[in-house]
Image (cartoon, rainbow, N blue to C red; front, top):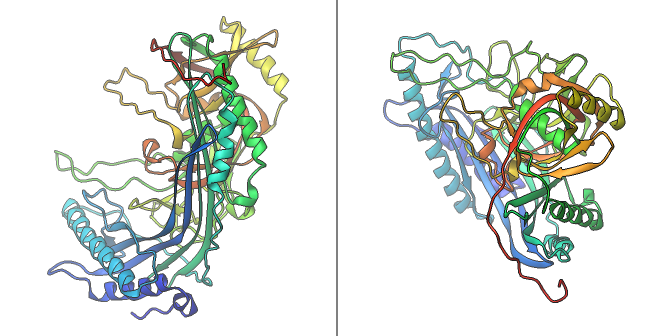
Length: 553
C-alpha cells in the first residue's frame, strides 16, 4: 500500500519519516510462520517543555528541553482475530519511544523502524498467546477494531514560547516565606507547548495543537503531638493566557499555610459516622474518582484460561441501566461545546473527533464513552479513545458536567446536614473542603482479607466540623472508609455548581499517574450533602524543629 500525506508529510520531517517507515513495516515486517501486520497506527508528539520547582522564593530545580516521541501500535492477523483486546504477558503490540529532537532523517527513521519492529514482535507474541487461549473455543468478537470515518487535517506547527516558568514558580513560592512553622513546602510548575499528530494505514492523518500548564503546591507542618499535616493545591490550565494573576495563586498559598497553623492543636477525627458535606474541589474529586470507571464502555481484555482450562468471564464494570445517582441527576461529556476547557481536543488518540455523549439521565446510565475497542451493543467510537505510554486506548472522559435536578443554597444545605447529624446523635457535621488530587496522592492500599475496607477516596487534606451555632472547627488525621459508587445514590442535596476544574487523570489506575503525567480532563459538579459516610483518623508522635531566621523570630 502507498501512503500519501501530501503537504502534511512534506512539511514535517518526523511525519515524513513516520509515513515511510509505517509503509515499510506493513509490507516488510515478517517472521517465519507468523502472521504479518494488517494494521498500524502511530501517534507522534513534538514540542518543548519547561519544569521548575521553587521553595521560599528561591529556584530549587529547573529543566527544559525539546520533546519528540512516537507511540506505535501494530496489529497482526486479521480484523476478525488479532493480537488486541487480550491480557497478554508482554506489550501486546504497543510501544512508546522517545525520538531524536533534531530533524535528521536517518536518525528519525532508524528509531521509528526499531520501534515498529519491537511492536511487531510483541504483537506476534500476544497473538500466539491469544490463539492458544482460544484454541477450540468460540471467539465472541465480530471485529477487533471498530470502523471509523477517515480524518485528514492540515499540518500544525507547535508555537514554542519563551520560558516564564522559573520566575513564576519562584515568585509564587515566596508566599510561604513568612510562615516559619512550615516544615516543608514546594511549588512545582510544568508547561508544555506541542503538536500531536496521528496517522494509520487506513489513511488517517490528523494534526492538532496541545498545550498545558500544571501548578502543584504542597506544604507540611507538625501538630503539637508530632503528627505531620499536609495540604495541597493543584491547577491544570490550558495555556498561559488562562493563568490568573499571580496574586490570586499567592493568596491561596497563604490560605494553605494558615490552615496548617490551625491544625497545630486541632483535634483528630478518630471515628465519625454521619452526614458529610463536600464543597467545590472536594465534590469534583468525589465524582471523578467514583464515576470515571462507570462511564467508559471499554471492556476488560480477555484472559488466559484458568487452572480448569476455562477462560474467565469478566463482566464490564460499566453497565447501561445501572443507577448511579438520585432521580433528576444527569452527566454529560461534551468536549466540542467547550473548546476553552482543559479537556478539549479536536481528535482523540485514534484520530476520531469527540461527540457529545449524554451519559446519565435521571440518575441512570443511559450511554457510555467509546473508543475503537469493540464492545457488544456499541457500533462506533464516540471519539474518546485515549491512553498513555503502551496502554491500550481506553474510552476516557474529556469535559464532564455533573448536574442535579435542582440546587439549594449553602445555608439550606447546612441546616439539613445539621438536622441529620442530630438524628445520628452528633452535635456537628463534617465538611470536606479539599481532597488530594489523584496525581498528588501518596496513598497505596492493599487489603489482605475480606474484612478490611479500603478508603475508596484519596485523603481529605482540609476538613472541619460545622456546629449548629455556625462556628467551624478544623480537624485532622481523618481518612475515608469503604467508599464506593453506591455512596452517590445517598446524595441528599446539591448546592452551588462549580466552574469547570482542570485535572490530570489516568485510565490505568489510581497509583500510576505521576505528578506531571496523565490525560487532561475537566469536571464540573455541585457541592453535595451525602447522607452517611464513615471516617477514621489517628495522630503521630514525631517531633521536629524547623530552622528560623532572625526576621521570623
